[in-house]
Length: 154
Image 1 (spheres, one colour):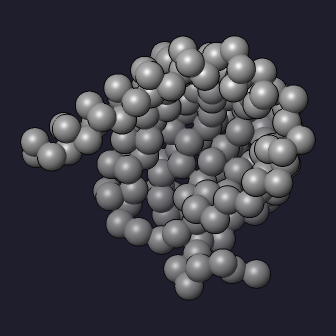
Image 2 (tube, helix red, strand yellow; image 1 turned 180 degrees about the vertical axis):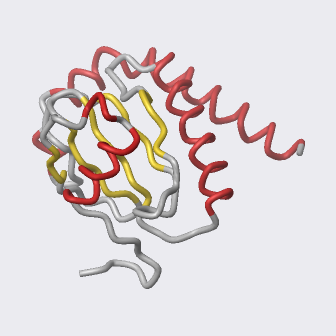
Image 3 (spheres, helix red, strand yellow; image 1 turned 60 degrees about the vertical axis):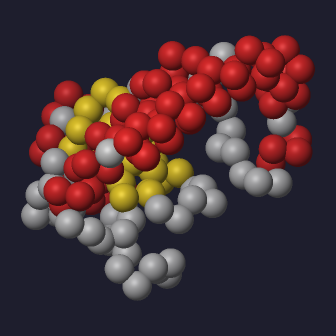
């Protein structure tokens, strides 16, 4: 069932086809849909170490590429400050007859997919909060405020 009136169709079969077409080095790996509470992207595991991330809402492909570039820059920036592992971009899927927008392949961080209620049972979150948050929060705030200043300046 679609969550959005402009929702794009993506499933394991189409993901497998797109991987085979654009990333043949991973075509033999199993593809598994990751069930999340997210509403903007669909995620599919590619074997044990990778994940494909597809935007779910239709938009202009050029705008989507610009948004994706901004997200990837933010991911790299976050990774440089984060005390916990963060996904890394390993490939960009391009619009095709099968899927009209750019999509990405990222590293998969082992663990359980987080849900709002699942955070309450997290064993990692308290460890991060008590040991790393004082070191993690100030750089993130600097990044956020520098981005805000840059946005106002343009």
